Structure formats: C-alpha cells, structure tokens
Image 1 (spheres, rainbow over the protein chains, first blue to last red):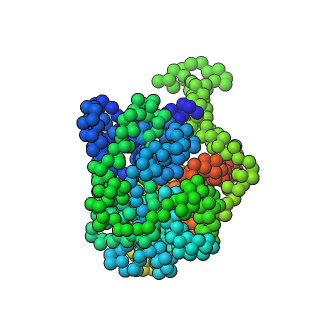
Image 2: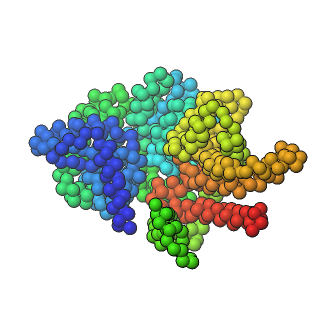
Image 3: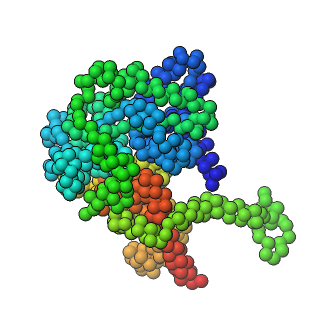
Length: 336
Length: 285
C-alpha cells in the first residue's frame, strides 16, 4: 500500500514539475496546492512574492503551483503529495488535512488573521443582457418563470455555498421558521435547469449553451465572466443577503518542515495580507480586509449582508452533517 | 526463429509447439493479478469495513436506485441502437468498396481515442438548444441535451466501436460459398441473411452489444456534460460514486461501484456461457 502511495505522489510531482513553465535554478522552491480557478491569480501573486522575498533575504524562490478541484487536491496531499502550503476555496478541504492526515494543527484557523482567510467573496448572480427577468434577490430565484444554473452542491464547493446562501436568506426571510425555510429552498432547488459537477461546467452551460436565466457563482467569477464575454452583455447582480465565502490558507507544517521550507511557507502566506498583495487580490475581483484597498475598490463591491457559516449552520462540521451528509437536508429537499 | 527451432526439436508428447509456456503463463497470471484482480480486491477491502446493513443502506438509497434505473435503461437502449447501427457500419466497411473507405474505417475508432470529457462537451454543444442538431430537434419539440436522451447519446457515441470492431472480423471471415449456395438453392436475399449470415454473426454481434452495454454502465466523463444531472431523472450511477468520493466516503463509493461491477460481471459471464452453447450447437460439437 505504501508503494502505491509513493508511486502516486511521484506521478503527481512529475505532473506538476512538467507543468511549471519556467524551471530556472532557484535557490528555493515551494509547492502551493490550490483550487481550480486560481491559476492566473497565483501566477500573478507568485511573481509579486518572489520579488518581495528576494528583497528581504536575497534568495530567489520558485513557487510551483498545483491546481484542481480542492477536494481532489486535499486527497492528493493526504495520499502523499508533499505540498508546502494550501490555498483553497473551502474550509472543509483544509480541515480534512487535520482530521485525516494530522498534517496541520487543529487550530489552523487561528494561525493567521481573519480566520486564515486573506480574501473572501460571496455568491452573486450573472444575468442576461438587461436583466429581462428582473432578478434582484433569492426570492426571485424561486419564481416559476426563472430558471437558474449552479453546480451540484454534492460535487462542488461552489454549489454548497449557493445552497447555504439560499438557506441563510430563507432563515432570515422567514424569521427562523425551519419548515418555511425548507419549503423555500426546495422550490429554489426545483427551479435549477442543470446541475453540472463543477463551476466551470456551469459557466459553460449558461454562457455557451444558453441555458437558464441566472448563473449563480462567486462574485469574483461573475466579474471574470463578464470581462471574458463582453459581447453577451451579461450583468452582475449582487443579492442583498449572501454567504461569506472564505478562501482559507494554511501551511502544511509537516511537509514544509520536511522540505525545509517552514519559514518560506509562512512568509508566503503572511505576504497575502500585505497592502500590495491585497490590492492584487482585489484586482482579481476578490473582496479583501485591508481598509485602504477596500476604499479604493468601493465602487466594485456593492454592500451586501454576509452571513457566516456559524450563523447559518453553527459550524462547517454541523453544516456537513445537517445539510450535506447522505440522507441529510439537501437530499430530503431534492427528494420527490 | 524460435518457431523454427521449436519445430526442429523432437516432440515429446505433451510438449507444446511454442517454447516458454511456463514463462508466458507466469507473466500472464502476474499481470492479471496485479492489473485486474488487485484493484477489485482493493474495492472489496474498502467495503469490508461496512456492515451488511450499512452496505445495504448505501446501495439501496432511493436516489442511487433511481440512478441504477436511468443507467440501465440508457445503457440498454444505447447498446441496442449500437447493435443495429454498428452492424450496418461493419457491413458497409467489409462488403463495399468506396472512396474514402480507409478514412471511415479509421474514424470508427475515434470515440476510443477521444477523451470522454471532450466527447461530452462536444456532444452537449451539438445537442444544446442553440447547437447545430439541438436547434433543429427543438423545432420538432425534441430536447436531447440535459435530458435522459442525452445520456443515451453519450453512451452510444463512446461505445459504438465495440460493436463495429467485433462484427467486422466475423464478417470478413464469412465464406462467400455459403451465401452462394443459399442463393443457388433459391433462397431470397432475406432468407440468406436470416438463415446463413445472421447465425454466424450473432455471437460476435452479441459480444459487441454486451461490451457496449457494460462500457456504458461505467461511463462518466461524456455523460455528466450532457445529462443535466437532475436528481432522480438524469443522474447516472457513476455520478453517485463520484459524489461519494467528493465526500471522502470511500466505503460508500466502493459499495456502489461493487454493484455496477457485479452487474457487469454477471452479464459478461452469462454471455460467455450462452455463446459457448450456441457455438457448440451450430458447429455440431
């Protein structure tokens, strides 16, 4: 079994090694295991970090990236991929590194500011030109003349956030009446036209196939899609209430120590909180915590009431067991 | 070379013509064990942690059961469709000469060569309401993409070569004398086909259909892009397995996978047994 694991990590390391574009001889190398849609973001940040690190220590650093669905990425690390840091889009995928592999401490959320989430986003709507269905909030998505597209909450973090956002809205709208909230979310789920397995698939379905009136995804993605397809005249709608989607980061201490990269790995994540880096992140349509940068980008990010996972379900563990586990609420609401 | 040496050696009874039987048998067995049996053992080990009740709970979940039905029906229709179309294609490729025949023959393998995800994306682009086929079908009121029909399309696309490639060699080997005899004895074309050609083709065709069917049961990449994946309507079993994996529920995933594996194995065994019977009957052995 060990042999299998080893072979797997070698294969993965090879795949990553081959995909890294420049392989000049750097003094230090760092492996960042990240989520699918963060390629451009980290390509840009790595350049920034390399210059900061060079200035500070005089050493050159090459950051290698590995991207994929973040659940799959976490599995790879548990199975032996020796990544130094993780930068994911789901708290649960970082958590699993503690619960399954004991690779990070239990209190990893307290190691860095803002619960180890240097930037965040929320679930927003992409609507067709002129917003013909007049969609502005979650209750519009339960109307029988509106059909929406978002990825399957069972297979995608993106989809889970959307589900939680709708549920959080319903809890507030019906003042905690669980039966009414359930009924609302059930209707909301029944208006979905297609359940793709991932965020990019849902985007293709909405943009290229012309299915649905509303695509629900991260606000950052919504803005990227609008920029990518200017001819379609898509518009962004940020609902009044939505979900705080955190992008947690952590040093995989066990691996970073073994790789002799602990200090470098910590610096890499710390730098994400610097003003320059936060500006860079905001440029990629992510919301950030730095107040100076917030003020600069105020126009781009409309005010929205963000509900945390604690407010909606207590904790991520509870959310998983109450809503997403087998036979739990989501399954019940999709039952017919 | 080795053949020449082997045949020049004095043959003792029980000795085989080709040397190295022990070695090649050993390699075959090792390969079968490592590549085929070990993963299956792994699957069983993964599920071994579950009690029977847990196993039953996972595999009899209503949503999973709905996915079995969708998958089985779609695979059945797709493989039968492939049986008809595949036979026709094989027939044309073997019996007729036409310009571009070699290209068409090579194209037959395209579904195997193409990554299934690419196939899925391409098919959904074609069959979506704004796609080339989809827009025409929409005028007739038929929707293919994002319905169970889309699943059938994806399955039959990815598994068509199985039928063509199993029927082709049988057709090529068919002796023209049998047909000629049939015709000279006054048989109509239909009788000749029904009584002479089809009985010889039938075992190969059935193997092709069965392979196409079992391949469809496990298809994932091509389907998820065109199915729409609506719970209870267009979710396939391989998606249910994928969902369990996403939840780090390896035991649950293996449990559902074991059901698919068992269904495929039983089907393939039955076909093999039936074929042996059939061949014995028509060859009179």
